Length: 212
Image 1: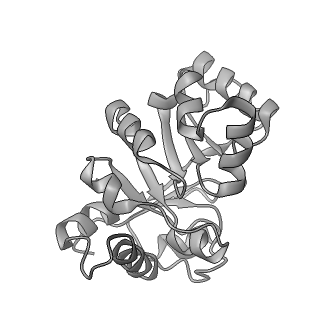
Image 2: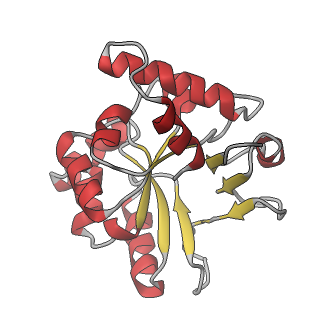
């Protein structure tokens, strides 16, 4: 492979995903250990101390979020957190805290230790804060569209200098864990966002594919 290819969030079909890229970031129970597969442990309350990076698939469980936050701070850990990924999750958090998911992570003191996955409901203030804190964004184009969540504002994030990756997630709408398919879908959502063709440059797409 001439260019670096990273599947930045894969929760199913990990070995199939690995065959199509250089590196897979696997966030699922019983992920296979192999060269080029980075395993991030899904968070649970029973997780022992010392794990350096965790995955939290949802912020809407208040108790789980609080415990995960304590874990991150106590262990100086990093976290991939699926946040602002649909209107329901964003609405629940807004109703509880009068904050967006990103603003809540900031208030909890962990935003700078997070990578955000999903990001469909990010607004300008969220993205400005993510850029300020150096928070990466992982896009899940086929999953977000397939589940009816929408698509993330990738061009707005690129404009702010946010580091961006792309993942195949649970592969429900990309059954072959095909990273090329995911990237092609991403280019279409970017064009839709900007209402123009070729909204993302070749260099930008290369950086997204490399999670650079």
